Amino acid sequence: MSERSVPLYCPYCGEEDLRPSEAGHGAWECHACVRVFTVKFTGLLSRAAAGPAGAAAPVPGAVTR
Image (cartoon, rainbow, N blue to C red; front, top):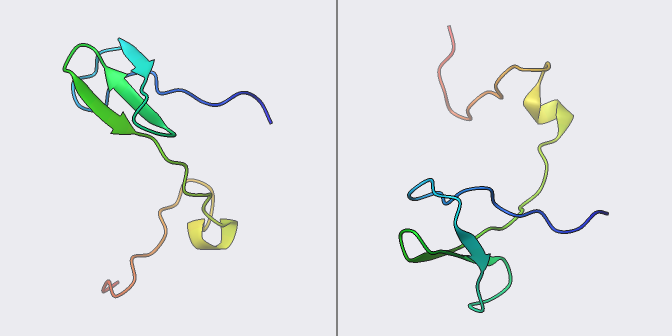
């Protein structure tokens, strides 16, 4: 696999002044809004759950007509 992915902008203020943080694995510091946040990859959607390309997966318990 390639090198680790990095966030391109802060999810809180949108600025791009980010640096890795010593707070832990996946932690980033935004020097514009002085926040520390983490980024975690949780997995991929399965093709069966996603349905046809571009279609949203059905919401469990939702009423369809």
